[in-house]
Image (cartoon, rainbow over all chains, first blue to last red):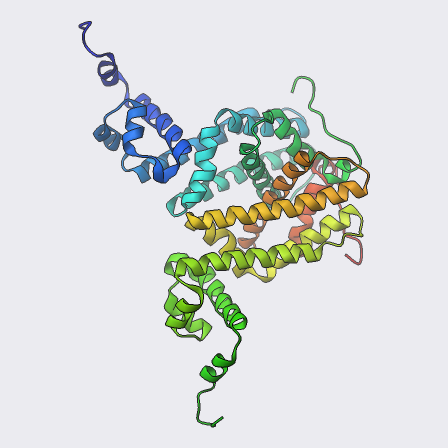
Length: 219
Length: 219
């Protein structure tokens, strides 16, 4: 390698496709979340990703394709983070707490992802609305499976339809609270997670009488 | 009036503008919810409303304008229904129960409204996403005010930021459960409302131990 050669193009050639795609998607999520779908340009995304525009199109297709791929990837990362956060051996309240911490932790650390997933995708509509609906369906299935598992371990029978409705309510509550959090970023992930934990574990019935839930010391 | 005269045009002329607009909006909500925004045509809406297409445009503007007006009207009707359902003199659990019953009662009786409000509007995006976001903001403010009032009446102080976060979570839970209900129409409004009531009043903590909330006999 000659010292005068520019470094980026050389490294670019050596990158495996998967790594290159991840870089492009990171850049695209950052640009989409900052500017929104319409104002974001393929010029800007290719510049941030450090790749030529023709290569950008060759790798990930049109701006619409790229946006849909962003939604799918961010949704998958989020659902994996929640799944990883849950500890199946723990008591049901600790499991729920870990799941909520993982969710709000993900949103807090990946605000750009959440912005793209939730706000940008829902303000675009069309095919992206379907991606979003699919993501919600996956999140509801994951939460329903966790609730069923938790109820089983307590010896409490739940009809699966009941559990699915509760899971839908819980996912909606988390989604809405995370959206509210975007406008109140001064709160910590733990504080926001604790608010939802108290709502869904203790319920207003306990809260209005001053009984609150506290995480275990190591949680 | 001559017996041979067609009846509709004569009656049409006599209708005050507000009544005529309501008829058009009823027709538009029915058509939009059945066919979706794109497939719905101004021809079909004018036919269902029993009004000529030029009159339809003169009264309510373009299809986009008409759809936005539908969203605003349905949102206003829904928020009024919830406000009317709440009985401020009652105990907090009964107030919450009445609010949830009013919400799910509205969705159950006006499935077309909910379909337009929630599914069609969110799958369209663009300016309709803004209408939806405004509606959610109004619903969250209403719920936060009810929660504050209820906490005050119990002598429990709540920071307004706390209350707003809880209200956002509760609205999201209701919205998501109502959406789930569209796909499970065999459930009654009372059963769906009771599920959310138990989640947010009793909490999972009580539910996993088999303690559930029952409405008062007259509720």
